[in-house]
Image 1 (cartoon, rainbow, N blue to C red):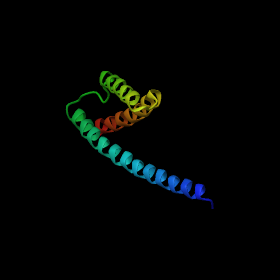
Image 2 (cartoon, helix red, strand yellow):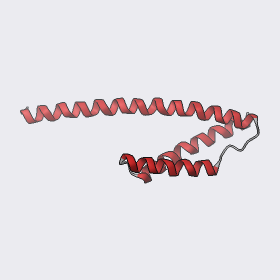
Image 3 (spheres, rainbow, N blue to C red):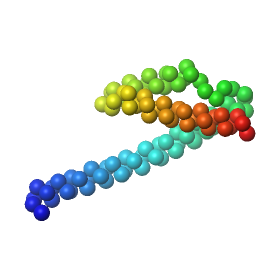
Image 4 (tube, one colour):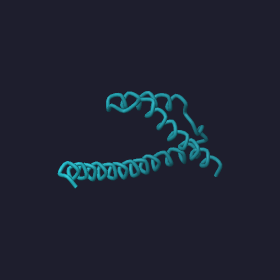
Length: 99
């Protein structure tokens, strides 16, 4: 292996280690977020509130798109990602109301 290949392999390991660390951060962050949204779902069910709040959801999507732009992340991807998360949260909220 050449020196350049050794350097490339080392850089590749460093990038992969960072990716692995960030994946763990994402998973734990999502778990914490869902812990809070589960509490919101229980609160909504206890007080007979609707499982979804379209106004809040629209605000969150717009906010996330702005954050994505600031961070250099594709806002369309951020919107799609948050849309997926919101769908899952609403599904959980509906489950709380059924119980």
